Each structure stands twice: as structure tokens, then as C-alpha cells.
Image: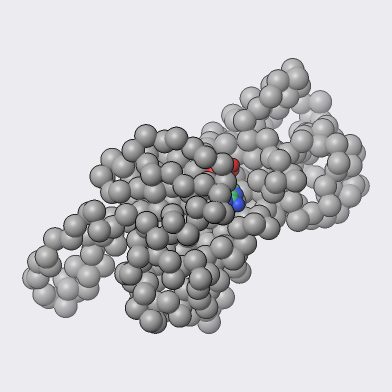
Length: 306
Ligand code: NAP
Ligand code: GLV
């Protein structure tokens, strides 16, 4: 079995060593132009030339959860595409989102500013019931996030494409229930895949439906958000702030207003990192399962876009 590795965002050597240790029966090489045909591929952001030269691939494993960039390429028709399914990302996403929700709810930035000015001031406690959190996307990551939020006793709403029954969560689904979901939420967390249906989904019209004093946490993809609509709603006071981990252009351009906005917290696409060892173990297990003709979790539905 031949495996080709083409990940443009990472040092390939530790990945190659790890994959070789996990799959000693396989020949595993770093892809380069003109490489011999492989059976399987492990990829992140490969160039179009990669797929043009490897049309025979049986399966392609992405070393991330979101496959929006991959699906923009011309892909080999007969290959299966498999994304990471949690692989240690869900707990990271739960940490990040709970931290952002709690930081906003408990006014920790206000306290930090007070303390930096030498002010010892206790603000009135806020009512948790006034801060319902709405999570868009109830997949592998979204479900872990809603579960974590309920431990802190926030009212939690969830929105997905198909109906879900999750204990302790008020569930909404489909386009027809989206406005009700937004109206029931004050803090909005985005964990949707980027598809033709979800691009630009956080815009002036949808964000205006959040309860007054709304707060936006985007941990999915930058293109879900219309940047200028967020800024306008922050200026108008309808939104109180935002925590953003993902951007339309990454790294975020130095002159982008998000860098300096007092009510926006940014992080450099680090809310849930790919963990190499866990990911290699998952990919190796799935590759062997596919060889045995078994179904694996995380198979991408290319037509659906995630
Ligand atoms: P997933 O398991 O595929 O879950 C996607 C969820 O979105 C599902 O609940 C799906 O509904 C819902 N959905 C898709 N299209 C929808 C639509 N048009 N309307 C309503 N709901 C829709 O994905 P995941 O593993 O949780 O990952 C989610 C995303 O997180 C990834 O695609 C990636 O962009 C992002 N991500 C970011 C980072 C980071 O570091 N910032 C790290 C990892 C992942 P159904 O359940 O009904 O199908
Ligand atoms: C990171 O953004 C991922 O999709 O895994």
C-alpha cells in the first residue's frame, strides 16, 4: 500500500515518522511533482496539481475537521474523503467557547480594565437566564460545546440542518426555524461547516435577530461572517462584543479593524488545534477499516459540502 503526504501548513517530518510507525506495512512518502501513484493520501491545503497527478486515489484523509478548502478543488471522482472526527478537537473547542462565554458573562474584561487602573469595584451580579447561548452546528464539535455549556447552567439553544434531540438543549433545525433560534439567543456560537448554504450566514439581518446586547463567538470559518455587518451592529450597540478565532483572510491583515476594536477579542485560528499523534492514530485506524471494506466516521458527503 502506498500513501502520499501533502500538507502545506506543517512540518512533514514528524507526520511522516508517525504515519510510518502506525502503518509499518505501508510505503509512505512526501508528495512531490511527478511522484508515483499512491493508494491513499493524507492532506491539508494541497495544490490542484496534487489531485491532477493522483486521479487514482482511493481515499483522501484531511488532517482537519473542516473540508471547505479541499472541496473547492477538482477532486478524483472515485476517491472517498475523510475528515478528522474529534481527534482531540472537541474538548479544546469546549474549553475555548466556555472561556469566551464566561469571560463575557462574568465581565472579566471589565474587571481586568478596572484592576489595570487600580480600581477595586464589584459590579452587580448578572442573571444567567438573561444570557441564553445559541450554538449553530450540532455536529462532533457543536455537541461537545453544548454539553459543556450546560454544566455552567446557561440556557442553551442548538440549531442544525436536521432535527436533534439533545438533553438539556432547546433544539431548532432547518432554515424555517433559524429566526426563532436567533431570537431565543443572546450569545451566538458558530460551529457550522462552510458550505454554499452557510457562507455569510452571520450578517446584518441574522445578527440583528439576536437579543439586545448580543455577543458573537466565531470558531468555524471567517467566511461565515460579514465583517462590516458585525462592526456596524457593534457600533449601533445592538451587539456588545465578539470573540473571533477565524477570518476571511488569515493571517488577519494588519490594517483590519478587528485588530484594534475594543469589544473584539481575536485569536489566530487556534481554538481547536490538530493534535498530531491522536490524528495519526485515527487516520491509520480508518485507513485499515476502509481496506477491510468497513464504514468509517467522518466520511465527507461531497455534494452536501461537509
Ligand atoms: P460536523 O460534525 O460536520 O457538524 C456540522 C454541523 O453543522 C451539523 O450539526 C450539521 O447539521 C450542521 N449544519 C451543516 N449545514 C447546515 C445548515 N445549512 N443549516 C444548519 N445546520 C447545518 O462538523 P464539526 O466536526 O463539528 O466541525 C464544524 C466546523 O468547525 C468545521 O467545519 C470547521 O469549519 C470548524 N473548525 C474550526 C476549528 C478552529 O480551530 N477554529 C477547528 C476544527 C473545526 P446536521 O447534524 O443536521 O448534519
Ligand atoms: C481547523 O480549522 C479544522 O477545520 O480542523
